Length: 505
Image (cartoon, one colour):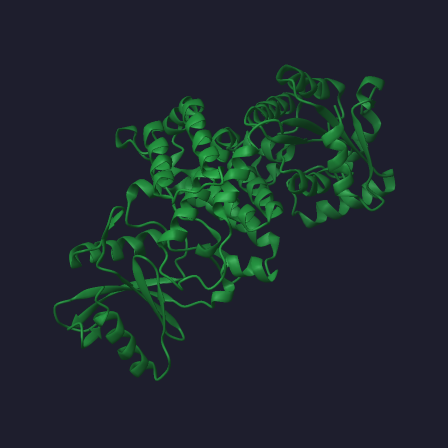
């Protein structure tokens, strides 16, 4: 490939900056890095999945790259600038007929990429929670695909997976054949689910390439960048396909705990428990995509070893069945139920359904919103009945998708507990009760501190706690047989609880 233009641009930038300019190459672009900026030049390639062969096409896709990525990272993407002059003597900007175009961005250190934060142990998990919230908001505002477009149809999804499989080099270890058979089986089993997702508006204009090397910590926030601009079919996808890319990549990099934490945060903001039915498929598909991309990268373009994405796809495909089980929490406000559930879900790969969050969702409130500030009474008997109906629906969807499920609520009424136990019986999955205990004075101190901080979805204050202490319905003998006891005033052993849950029921 002719590198005259990129070499001359690099030299021109070095003279302008009086400093060394680094060059990074991918299979479809070159990126020139000054101390403060990054200039991306698209290669004049015509590949099966992209056509940058004309200057008009490259200009169009530069504009698209700017438009699309500004949704996710407006602080990074600055503008599109023309390149004038000749390939051997180019000028960035100025007058004249453009011979090409550059996407100009703010530069960030490679050490700030999520993949490198993970590798060096510098990621604050709370930052992933913020990313999940922002991604949900971006997805909620994104344009919806029309049914006529065909985006998100079962045929397109299955064909895309098969095309990726066909592009992978043949292997003799049996993993690829196993994954291919699994993909075919799932394509048949998920057809109605994909149609329902398409009809419900879940297919939107997303990022399309949301892995850990395309997310950067910038000004204290994790920002996705470098989304798919060159092929609408890779961008107009189910929102679950978008976020499942990241949960897959975290697992491929050995951080299952962070994958499950991110999924929990995203589900709390989106409420899209129906999407769990297709989540595993998209994780496997995304692992195959990354395995394919590894074969397309130029030699030497990847400084660090890549995860074994085919192994990840194979392992994820094997986890589909036999893991579903149901746990409900039990205990007064301040007993530590949500804290333990959040740790346990990371250890067990579980899906959590929180009553405090789902109650508010029924009334159009965000998790941290205060209902009284909106003039709403969401804690009456009718509202509570609606909430437990919602909890049962969400738990059922997650169990049918094959996940362990934790329903995080006080469950101080026997009838509420029986409704969830009946669900476990209906679906023939093990049932457990996580009984969290602390003495009344400790409960009062915790609730008062939480109420003052205002940083939790729960709105239960000390007055609510006092009513709970006076009017709860204790666990009966048949329920105690399913109990895992936890004294939350002592150190809590999450691996021990997780092991007990696996053997309960």
